[in-house]
Image (cartoon, rainbow, N blue to C red; front, side, top):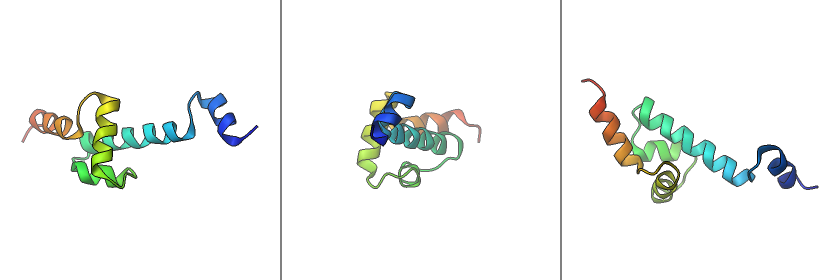
Length: 78
C-alpha cells in the first residue's frame, strides 16, 4: 500500500486536496481576521499565482476573496 492510499483511507481525501483545503482555510483566516490583501493571503498560504488562488477560493467558498474582503471591511468599525 502506498502512502497516498493510506492517507486517503485515513483522511477520506487525497493529499493534494487536503493541502489545498488547508491553504484555502488559512487564506480565509488571513483575509477575514488579519486584514491581509488578496495577494498577501495568496502568497502567505502557499499559492504562487493570485489568479489560481482566486479561482480556487471562489470554487470552495462560493465567493471571491476580493468580495469577501470588501464585505469584511464594510462590517468592521472604523
